[in-house]
Length: 102
Figure 1: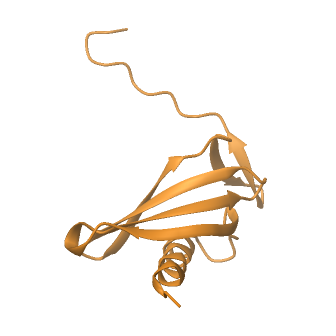
Figure 2: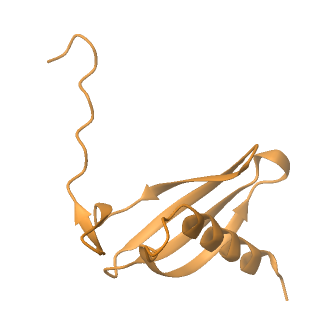
C-alpha cells in the first residue's frame, strides 16, 4: 500500500492544527484527499477539505526553512473566521485599489 497519501494527509492536518490557538477547533470537518505534487525542494502538498459548514476547500502547503506554509487556493463558501467560540463565514476583505486608481 502506498503511504504517500496518508503522509500528505497527516502533514496537512498537522500544519493546519499547529497554527490554531489553544482551544480553537479546526475549521475543517475532514481532509478528503491530500497528495504530494512535484519532487525535491519544489515538492508541495495539495489537500481537499470539507469545511465546518460542509463546503469544500483546497489548501496548498509549501515547504520553507522552518516547516510548511499554507494558503487556501479555493474557498468557495467564502472566507472564515473564528468568532464568539465558533467558525463562521465572513465577507472577503476588499483588495486595495492600485496606486493612481480611486
